[in-house]
Image 1: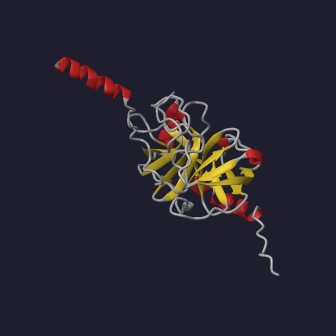
Image 2: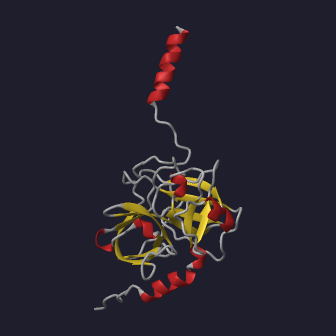
Image 3: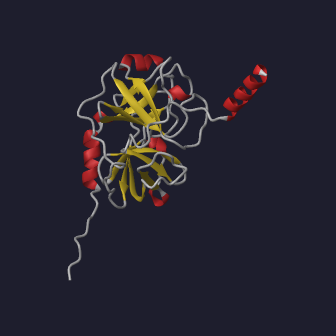
Length: 249
């Protein structure tokens, strides 16, 4: 009888979904944006009109939607704002081995709620040894595809440039616009183009090369956002949305 009960218990345990402890607390990242059209990726809201993402996202403005206030992208939770994308501006003139960054302008401004909030741009660069937090939709297991569903969160240590250069694959041409985080025996994989790295409450990176998702011994490389504040500011000034005054009668 005891053996029968044990078999039943194990069978029920196997039938139950395994809890993923890397799923974020719902709506704990109100600046995270789900960008989707022909494909999907993450972005990060920096004000009511603008989103930062990676060039890896490959977003096209003619059919793209930005969904704000998301957690589980497979259901409508009543917290979302779905806004059409007006412009996608890639780092000029195009992606090179030294840049991977895109700006996304919304067709209409986001409405800030407790589920939708911007995050500050960096006032300093990330420091080696600093603990940062990465979030995105996708798998946290190397070499495993997972369709986007619930937002995932991992914790990563920032590495110094020399360690990044030594540990990265040969095809990564290191540049000052890069920062890497995570290494063997730590979380270092989140397979979402544009996954967002936050350090000290500031936006510090978006996914560039998810090396840790191919080999868990490698760190993952992010665009070093502190090096791009001027470019981001220039793009927002150049592509400033035109807001018409209200009509009077």
